[in-house]
Length: 250
View (cartoon, one colour):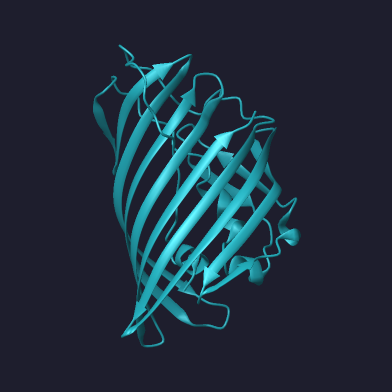
């Protein structure tokens, strides 16, 4: 079972940035309202490792995806374009590079709320041979990091299931760390009518560098997930670790 299967049953994998600097003495309101994302360019590296267990059998796999995305604002929506993409997979002791030419130039259209939640209204078609390794079609569902909760420097503050801490500020860039734990039940029906149900337990640690005018300029997310999947009378447990690192080029 690869990265795509996990994402289809609700295992979203995620992002942030490593931080250190002197503390801010006061609170600061942080949101995507007024953030300059028009003509922004981001580069992303996603590395995923997983172990799947079914009965006495065990399978290990990993994948690596690098991409460059460009963003253009059109009215009240953001149009995101995949300017470049590379994808590889190691499974069953075989390393292979995936042909991603059909996805180069792919476009998404989405609405972004002030807190960073995205509602994707248009996403590209991704051929099965690519989606089976990494479902690029849903890449924009949680690409941009959440906007940090305003909190005094060095103090933690909860935002629902997420806990935030501001750790520094330098040259107009504030730095935050977050962590969260979540459990989710998910159901999915495959194109050949196989019903899949899953329970996903995940723990995430992240960090983001936030520019006061441009918004997020770098972030990293480290996610560890346990996924128990049930289908066709079988139970598969997958342990997945994922690291997503993004930086803004302009």
